[in-house]
Length: 142
Image 1 (cartoon, rainbow, N blue to C red):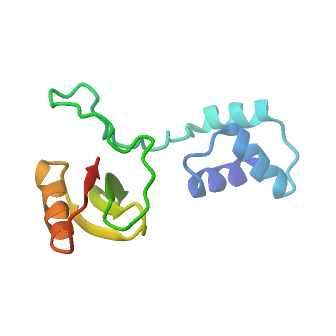
Image 2: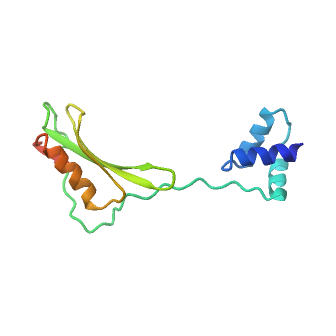
């Protein structure tokens, strides 16, 4: 009975280890300690799958010029005074897509954005072109 319940739970929750599975078994009314669950998992060949790692998107060792922070200590008092940009990734079932966004700091409105399948420079340039169609900031900080 315990083995069947353990196999079923491990199939439903493949990333759970013996600690979490023991808690799930306890919720089902089966009193068992972690050592026994660990031993049974080893005997049954059940191993927890490690969670999938996030892609590394930051490259601090790039050869590009580093620019000073122009907005540090600046009081933003009007729209289109300062725009900021960011790039993030969105997990799909089998891949990642990347989103570049430009935002007005004062109004917090999105001025431009673009989705792409790679982190090449076109991703940010298209987002910037879209933003510049709506206006031009005094300061644009990345």
